[in-house]
Image (cartoon, rainbow over all chains, first blue to last red; front, side):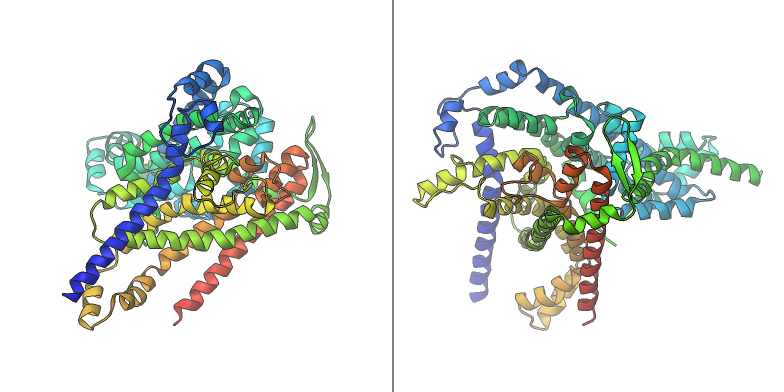
Length: 278
Length: 295
């Protein structure tokens, strides 16, 4: 009897903790969302109301229609994130597949080099990358952001692990049917790698969409800013216009949320995978 | 025939690897070598890029640069507070969610919201909450506590960023812990129950030792991530590292030297120091973990 009671007590404590933490997680977002629908006067007056007294869509109208660059930044971010994601999916899978499945001289050495790349701290490459992009004439260009991040060693490694556990029979059957390596890869292997590709999509898209330092360094022309950089410039321009800033922040967050909701299942799996289930 | 097959494999192998070799070579291997070499040069960025050999001068300069020491001490303080806090919070959340209770998956998705949101948006939202007329001060006013200028005080500015980052990063590590918790064989707990172990003893003698490799991973990733703090400080202080250098981090300082003062060689020397610091920190960490696993 006593045991059942203490059990209940624990359950309540757990729920309490979880709900409290959920509230702590949601409050900043709810507060920002509600501000994006409030007129500035209501925001400056202060108050802790989460439901706008005077609901307005004016802030959104303003950033899209009166801010000529906002739409451009959204477009830039989308172009960069989409292309970076597509190239990564293709190139990381190709490299991972070769390392896992094809016997060729240098295979082992290349795999070792990929592992070595994983431990290089990222910032060490930032300034030299800038100098290389500058000499290529790629500053303020889409390729300046896309090309250096088209391949990711972490996901080459991940794809290799994935393909190593992949049933060999299908490929052998394909080869007997007269398909060469490239045909086998694109027609048989890649379509079956969907879960791994989905996990990769979410990670690569998010990090490209949210990346701040690289676009800050590469883009100096306001027309070429991506959204995070634009948003920050926006802040400088409208120091007190929290209504516009919050509306812009919400527009920026939405695509990432949609991608996350769509691939959520694979996201958790992907984290599990990189979480070193050794 | 076999020779032909071998040749074909070699060709297709390198064919598949070519994009990775080119991109990682040009934008990773070359930059690392470039960074090491150029840190011994004075690099003039204005107009044509111009290099002049400077020997160890860039490294000697670091000694007398007061802002380097401020940035280093801010960053180390940040790492020492944020990494343990986010690790422990992640572990607690994972333990709570690992219990078989209703709505688990819902909580898991809910907690993830900050991890999905960009650092730029999070920083702006938090700046607004910390703002003199923001949610935090409104709340304090509501419960009749004194309000405060959170953004302007050098004493609390960095702590505000710390708080935000612990909150935003813990859920990611929570998921990693959750995955590891699911790998602990149920039979171990059953055996312990038969021996009469309490919940606390089970946690201490089964769960924690089992989680050691994951904790090592979480702390390593945490250290690397926190040493790289840039976005939040940059947005928070408009790139200055203020108020009064209180949010100046190493990466922000590197950025300032490279792009505001156009002093690339010195910035690269600082980069090497940062890389070295990160490596030493992870080595120290590994040492402590090895020590513990002996008993």
